[in-house]
Image (tube, rainbow, N blue to C red):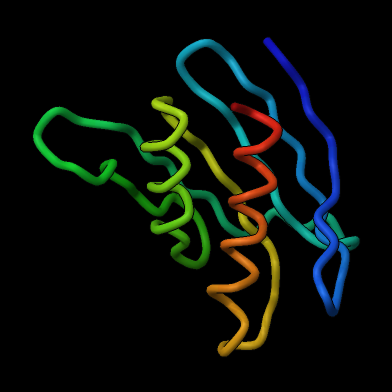
Length: 106
């Protein structure tokens, strides 16, 4: 088991990331300074689809980010993504967070 705590500096805010990584799975929490836990998704790779299969367990849907991480890390991913961003910046914020997580875990 490995644990990681780091921040991602975005133009308008600081985002916190906490990761607990096991051999075949990882739990990833991403959020702001209020440390909320409003969303939870799970994604897992399957031999039947190119994209990882993903299910929203709590709150808003963040399937795409969870699926990308599952595919790139080749692990089952449980992810709580709790970052509020403007709709036109949402994709950019997710991409920056994805890049930082992958740098730490690969």
